[in-house]
Structures are given as C-alpha cells and as structure tokens.
Length: 557
Image 1 (cartoon, rainbow, N blue to C red):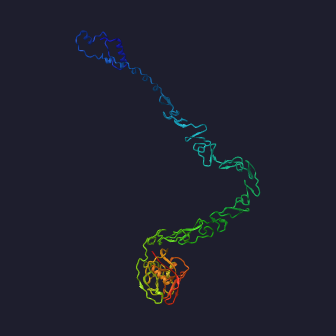
Image 2: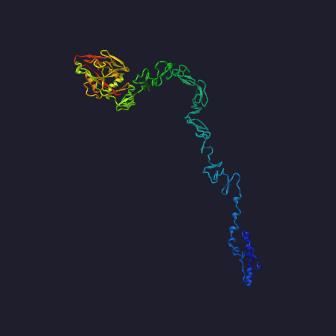
Image 3: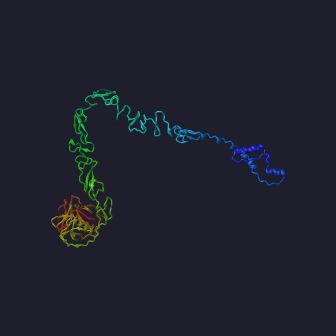
C-alpha cells in the first residue's frame, strides 16, 4: 500500500521532536509481503508489520501537543538567570538590602511599623530633629530629667536637667550656684553671678557689691549685721563664740556668755556649767522626772526610771508584778501564790508548790493529841487544849506540819516540852522561849514543834478571807479585828489555823495581836506593834481577857 509523501514527512517531524524510535517507511515502489499477497490473490502468512502500526504513525496527541513543542517558561527563566549583588538578598522576584529595607528588615517579609525605619537590620523609631532615641523612646537630652546629656543619666531628686546638666531646682528668684540656690541680687558670696564674692564690709545690693552699713545697735560681722549683745556666735564682739555645754543651749546675755537652757529630758542637777545638763531625767532613777526625785526601793523589785516616771525595773527571782502597779513592786510570789502559780493568772485548784500546782496540805492529816489538864481559874476553861509534840525542826517545817493537822503552834507550861516555836515571826527569827521572858530564834534553827487545838472546836475547815504569798509559802489568813482571847483561839481552831501576826506575813502594823499564852492559867499574851517582845494582862480568876486584834492563818504549801 502506497502512503502519501506528506505523511512520511510528518512522521519524520514527529521523530525529530520526540524521543520515539524512527520508523523506516519503504518507498511506494517497494513491494511488501502484504502487497504481493493482495496482487497475486495468493494466501500468504503475513506477520503484523510494526512499521505501519497506526498508533505509532498517527498519534495526534504526540504530534500536535503545544505544551511540549513550545513552552516559553521552560525555555527562558529570567529570575533564575539574574543573580543579586553581594550585599543583597533575593526576596520573591527582586533583590533587596535587608539592613535598610523597611519591607524586609532583617529578614524577607519582616516589615517595619509606620514611623519606623530599618537600621542595621532592625526596625527603629525615627526621632524628630533634636531628639535622641533612648531605651525605645525619643528624648531631648538637653532637658530630660531621666536622660540628661546622655541616655540613662537621671537627675537626682531636687535637681533639674538644664542644658544637658543636672542642676539644683531652685524656686523663682533663685539661681543654682554649686550646691546652693542663691539670690544673685543680695548674696555677698554670689553677687550678680555665681562665685562673685563681695569684700569685707561690703554687702550685695541689686546684684552689685557695696559698702555694708548696719543700723544701730547692730554691728558688721563678716557679711552680716549682728547684735553682739545676744548673738552666741558673736558675744560681745565679732567672732567671740560662747562655748557649747552638753545638753544645754548656748546663750549670750548683754555681751557675756551665760548658762543656757537644758534641752528637753535633761537637767543641771549639780549647778556646774562645765558639764552642762548632765542628768537625764527620763532615765535616771535618782533624778526621775526632776532633780532629786529618786525612785524608792520597791518590794521584791529593782526600781527604774522610764520617760521620767518610776517603774519596775526587774523583779526578784520567783516574783512578778501581776497587777501592773509599780508602787507595790513585784507583789506576787509565783512559787507559792495559788492564784498566780508559776505565772500571773495561773490559778491552782489546790495549792501552789514551787511554782507548780499541787494538792493542798491543809488538814491532810488527822489530829488527836493529848488533852492538857484543867487549870480551874481561866475564863471558860480557855487554856485547855489537845497538843502533840512533833519533835525538833526549822520553823517553816513546823508551820507546815501544823497546817497538815489543822492545828496551831502552842507550847506552854502544861505541854511537853514547855518551849518551842510560836506562830509569830519577825523576818528571819520567830518567837520561842519560856514564860515570862520573850525569846526568839533563827527560823532555820531546830526547835521543838508543839501543835495544839482548842478542845471546844467543832470543825477545822472554816473559810478564811485572804491569801498572800510570803517567803515561798502561801498563807490563807484573816484579820478578825479586836476580839477577846477565848474568841480568837476558837476562831483559829475552827479554821484549822494558828494565831499569827502581820509580821508573820512580812507586814507591819500599829496594833497588838494575840498569841497563845506560854503561862496559860489566867494570863493572856500579845505581840506589840513593834513585833519585838510581848505584853500580857493578868486578870482575876475566871475573868475574861482584854480585847486585842486577832489574826489567824495557815500555810497551804
């Protein structure tokens, strides 16, 4: 089969424009096996000819594909061909300098905000002329107190930035000169301008130095008009200063230095100018608030002076001021006070022993005792009682043993022994001895402890009204006032107490107080107000005693 020449030419073009293998098509005058078969009508086995495969010879998609035949973007690409300069960077389709480009500052696409410019690859505020960028803000270095003359140079309080320098901030009419605000119109050291010094005897008037003239009675001293009669720096003459005295003002009187006035809280107690006002009346316990006003000794406390008033300095060991009253010192014995045991306000249900709450020892032991014989002459058989000798011991131990038994200390001519401790104590000694001589012994010595109870008593736990701590012991007591002796002894027995005196509790008195009679019979004894010795009255047989004050008490620890 013959093929047109144009078709052969087209095949050549396709082959040239593609990578497909070239197909050699025989010319028209070449007889193929297929043509011979057709011409002779003789069956011939024909192998499919690859050369004339229609799909290869005529393939429109391959032959006429514009994208493949002519693609300008692939053939010529200007962006790839044109390189950027050494200081430039390609950002999209163009080259730019990242150190100055406001649209690409430091990196492609990093645009600066309006009002900013790109410097060294960073967006910065553009300050107006005359201002400087300081810490992200525009500042005028000539008058900015926070950036005076240079960024970050802040002026101190009281100073103002002027001309790029921190100077004193002066009120109207004054000018800063060094570290002072001065009036250039009248300052003799800065007359008309800073540092312009007027000569001796001259003054500054309207900014000019002129000769100084002082009105009488003032005198020219340096650059000032002074009254030498009363000026302590120019007392009697220019430059003659009165010497300073401790805690005293300097005073000039009629041209002579005289003692001044003490400053508050001080006084001149010795009248000597040389040491001025030498005493602090706010803290001196011997001159508290005024010269000679001494803080007196306080009970169980050291006195002190605070702000001109006497107060408690320190309390003695074991004592405290629980009422806040300085006049009675440290009134509470914390070792023995049941209402303030170990600390103010710590109340014990029983007793306080060495600052610790404990059970009360009062009436903790039974008492029987031996009954003394009747004398037959005393009033109402008053002097007959039961007694018990507990042996020798110190006074404090004896009163504790008596309290345990609800008894009193009552040795007499009808007990065995006849002498021993009595209930009256005076400081470090207590009553003892034999009728009719009053005797006493140190409370630490060992004496007989004879305890007794009135045979008429029906109880031993009647309540007593008062409590006091003295010398480490808590006393329950009551002062019944003037009583007959037989009344007083029965009051003591019914309370399980002993006859005592105010001296026993460390107090003073102006009265006589009953004590058990060592003679008994119809003789009745009392301790006088002095606390030393005893008095007595002898009355007729069966006569009642006189009336003296009656105090009874017992220890609770």
